[in-house]
Length: 344
Image (cartoon, rainbow, N blue to C red; front, side, top):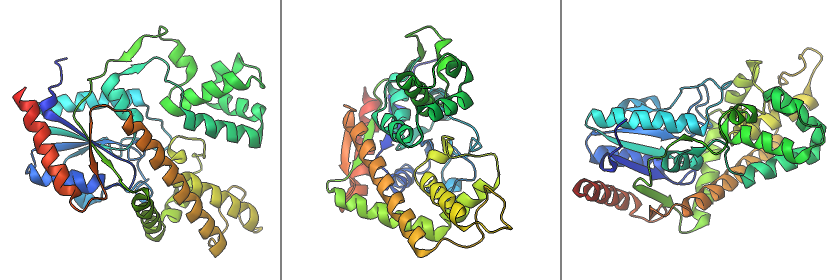
């Protein structure tokens, strides 16, 4: 394949609720349709998950060509390696049409995979490890071993039910990459699965004041609840083939809603409600308040991790998303970066 020309690629990243969608459409309008957007979001890939992912509307999707949205069923995994390969192919196709490829999103592992490629085994993820530790404390390592057996029977078969370190690593690899440890071990150790494109031009939307972002996160989660997030998750649960351990259902907002609905069903089942299904009564005020608090807290934690990732990317050009003229700054910087790349 020919090398990607950085003049025809621009990346726009930022934590959740930082205004990436508005900025992307502003750039699209400024360039008068001479670009196509590649989503860099591990939740937007899933069909039927629209409200909780803040998916662009049908009108927005029609206004600008989008890629890597609604490409997977929630039952399926989509790994960083798959994203990087798909994105590289799309960039070349978009460039061949004479358009700029604008990569927009907040899944930093996807950006890392695109920039630097992926090793056969993903690095440790402190957030995922902490999540697994908490789950193990609640359920015990034999239960975690049973979960591993469901997703990677080959690895589970060679591990003792109390081998906490290796069970944790195997589950971490699956949750981070969407691939099993046994499958990755089939590749040569240390071999690169995919070569990266290098440090592409990157505009990073970051808040100067965290409270500004926290307020936006709260407003957006409230808007999702008002728009029907709970009903959306109920519909996903009603399929009967999904579970809360799937990557899709671990997305922020969906996980917390699923947990509340589980508790609701356990407490409110009537004799005519089958086990595993939601009670017919609506969530009460206390349950709604708990869901709101958990959803907002989890989203804040996600934003914190995203900002930490961004600060490790040396090529990023920061625009303070809480500045009054943030959009104007994004447009000026986008023009400057593309002009600069064209001249080199």
